Structures are given as C-alpha cells and as structure tokens.
Image 1: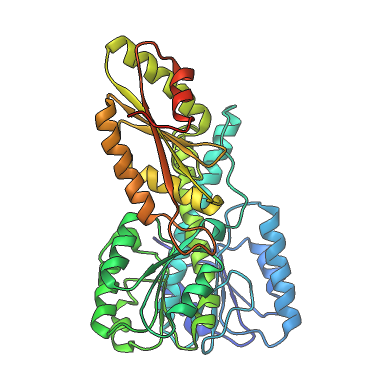
Image 2 (image 1 turned 60 degrees about the vertical axis):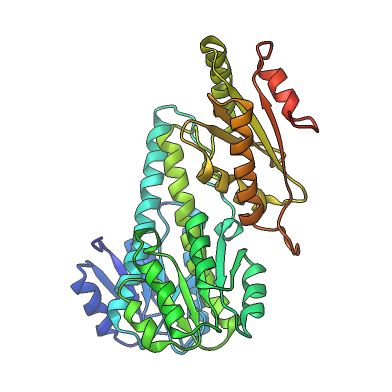
Length: 423
C-alpha cells in the first residue's frame, strides 16, 4: 500500500537517508523535528506514523514525548499511530510499544516495516468509521475490547537448543505459548491456530531455518507475522527481509529478544482483534469480536429458529457442550477460536459466561454428531493452550444431545448441561 502522510521523523541530527527513503515510497508531507520539539510536532500535524531516526540523548525529552504519545492514545481520537524506533545494537526502544529496527539496516527496510504497520492503522480506521456509521443509524454494535492485546496473543517458539527453556519461560510469562521442537510441528501450529508471532531459537541448522522461513514467506496469511531469530544464520535470514517486513534477528540473548519482540506481537494481536471486529460489524453484531463465534443473543435466536425448522421438516438436530476443567480466560478464548475454525459452515456455536462452548449441528443425527463432536474435542485436547503453570493440556469434557419429538429448546439444553451425555 502507498504511504500517505503526514509523517514525523525525530532526530537531533539530520537523517537524510530515512527522509529520502520515505519520499521514494511516496510519503508526504514529512516533518523533521528534534527530540525537544517532537511532542509539539506530533500535536500539530496528526501524523500517520512516527520514525525515531536516532536514539534520544536527553531522557527528559524522551519522557516528554512518551507522555504526549500516551495522552494521544488515551484521547482515542482516531486510529493508532505506529512508531518505528531505529536503535543501535539490540537495545530496546525508549518508547513503549515502539517497533524497534537496527540502525545499520538499509532505510528501505524501515519503509517496509512502516508499511506493514500502516496496514493495521488503515484497518483500525476502517473499523472506527464502520462503528460510527452504524451507531449513527441507531444500530446496537459491539465495542472494541479495551484489554491489552497481549492478553489474547499466542506466540510460537520453535527450537531445541540450550536457550529454548529460557525463551519458552520468557514468552510464556507474557503471552500464550505454543512450543515446537521441529519445523514440521511449527508448520502444523501455524496452519491450525491463530499465531501472533514466531520465535526461532537455537538448535536448528541453516537449512531448517530456511525451510521454516520459506513456509512463512510463501503464504500471504503470514505476510506481516512478527518473526524473531536468536543468534546467527545471517546468510539465510538476509534473503527473507524483503518478503517479511517484521523479521528481525537478535544476538544478545532470550531476555533481549523477548523485550524487543513483544511490541510486534501486541500490534499483530491488535490487527487480529480488528479483523474479528470487522467481521462482527459486517454481521451487524451477530458475531462475538472476541471469539468469532456467534454472540450470545444471536446464538439463542438461531437455536430457536433451528429447532422449529427441524421439527417442521422432520430432520435431525444435535447440540454439544464443550467444557474445560481449570481453564482461565486465555484458554477459554483460545478454545473458542479453535472451534470457530473447526465448525462446518452449516453449524453454529457460542461461548457461554462459564467459558463452556455450545455447538449446534444442523441436520445431524446423534451418531453423526458424536463423530463431529469427538473430532473437535480431540483437536482441542491436543491443540489448545494449557493454563498457566500446567504441564499438560486442558481436559475437554463433551456432553451431547439430539432433538426428540417431545423436545423444546429448554429441554434440549437441560440434557447437555447435566453430567451425562446421551449414548
């Protein structure tokens, strides 16, 4: 996508390489400012994006800019403003949530990273406009979640070297963790679930790293996926920078990698949240923007309609309840999003207040429903996240009921919220 300004470039010394790269990409206007005037410049032009072209030498000016940026976010006056921070070595950005990039990389990589962030900004703007339009028409619309996107994020950590345990702990303390000891299991995880970032640790040879990056680069779904590589493999990674704008290499160890990587994960998770919200708006609020399943009210309305239709036409209808012992909010959301991927087009489901999931299988008798429900349960058992500090997966319990001639919605539900499934 084309870059449309204004853009603010912050540096106490001129940064002609960054400015020229932005101009070549079509960015206009470009406002160059010093760190001392950065807060005022941001307030005066409402920037589309900000590039911190050099590290601030005065901590007071950096803190002032950070406070101004925080006030802008808290005001919620428009789409978020991405910040790219050019840094030396493997340092972390002085501004929270700034996307770090090494100072010695070609300026074109800054533009590619900025373009990836601009795609999410454009999506955010679209969602805000759609919400405003629907609200002006008197429509009841869902609200964007106000929680930290990291609360919903999942990161895949691939590796089998000495740093793997430290990487897994560092990532798992902040976001949902999926571990992979081989490139095959990593590829399966990428295809079976929503992943907001990939960390490639040590223990893999160049060919394995190249194979994994090739899988990602060739799939448009992962175009903007944050990918962090620990340690070497310069000769392999360099070839993928043009295709993966959020690819980075960190040599200073697991702690530094996690600190630099989490802002990218947060932004990607925010983008995924916006995609779900846009689908919910397209469905006039019938979809839950947290899970992608039907919203509660829409589910019960559709269930009543489906029961009535099944009785009139004399076709089967079955319903399953999936419950998860000891699950927390993150695990429950993960399970719901997996179910949304696994459901047939003719079926529908929702997540209840107790974190269980109701799934309705239309035109399906009890025998066929057993097959579908057990398949979904098996995938959940082996794929969904485990609760904090748990060593094994979550135990998934399934109860199942099918519509009988004497049933209504209440009696049908009463059977699946009991302790025993139908035989």
